[in-house]
Amino acid sequence: MKQKVVIQIPCLNEESTIGKVVKKLKKTLPSAQIIVYDNGSTDKSISKARLSGAEVVLEPKKGKGNVVKRMFSDPLDANIYVMIDGDDTYETNKIKESLNTMIKGKYDMLVAKRIHSDPGAYRRGHVLGNMFFSKLVNMVFGDDIKDIFSGYRMFSKRFVKTFPQNSNEFEIEAELTIHALEQGFKVGEFECEYKARPDGSLSKLSTYKDGIKILKLIFTLIKDEKPLLFFSILSLFFMFCSLTIGIPIILEFYVTGLVLKLPSAVLSGLLSVISFLCFFCGLILDVMKKIRYENKKMSYLSFKD
Image 1 (cartoon, rainbow, N blue to C red):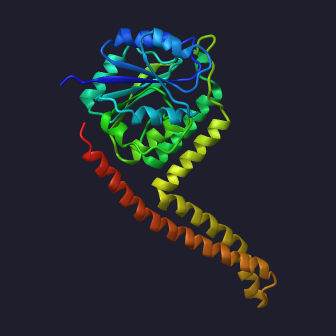
Image 2: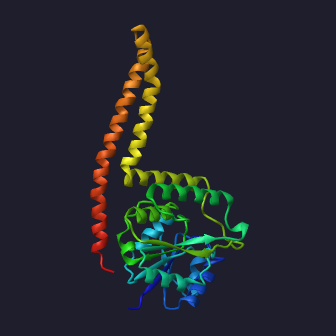
Image 3: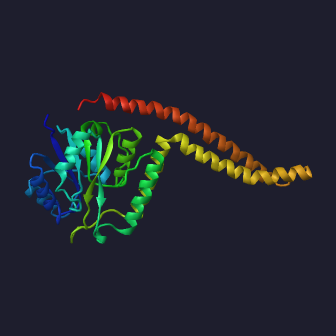
């Protein structure tokens, strides 16, 4: 069966690159439907996208996550969905090979692992941040995805139509990755040359502001998807604090028969109670998470490609 492909391009003020990206994709994959999702551009991005032959959909809610939410909710008749940024940093000349890998391997999500030889392609802070967050996610969710923030991905129709999205901004790539890993979907990677942005194209990603948002999202998802682990760590922390404060008081009481630091003793007791509460919260939420996991899995399996 011939697979229908739709290419969806999030775009915000990319007048210097969006036309080139659309033309390259049309040349490489002429049968694909190409849609540019504009997020409120104030330059000539919309007109250049249309002139290049792409359909344009306007999404007024600011944030890449909101654009992806619109992309995934649109009633498109396709078997494979390709998401790629409109800044012309991803090399697309091997997109047919990647699609063949996606189809033959029956992947739910295929992620472009960025390979860059140009030092200007990747800011140092972004390289270190990507390495840190990728290792954190892989350590918690048990996989080896090298580039969790890649903006070039391919999805099965079932993945797109059953994805329960929460994030609204640049955290979206991390959420896509974590959702796929937690649900046990088949995820793969393919290498892709990553180039520096051309003159006139500016990154919308803030190293520190968006980094904090991404870190917050990852910890929220760990809490939601691995509650027993999350609350066990909290429980151990509070128990450690309780023992650190309480043991000297117990030793002092053993020697003198007196509790000379009553407020510290009360604090130690409260911290131990909080520790036990955290542990039991983790147990309860872990049971609820398993029920939620089964519901998500049934929703995914019941969806017909």
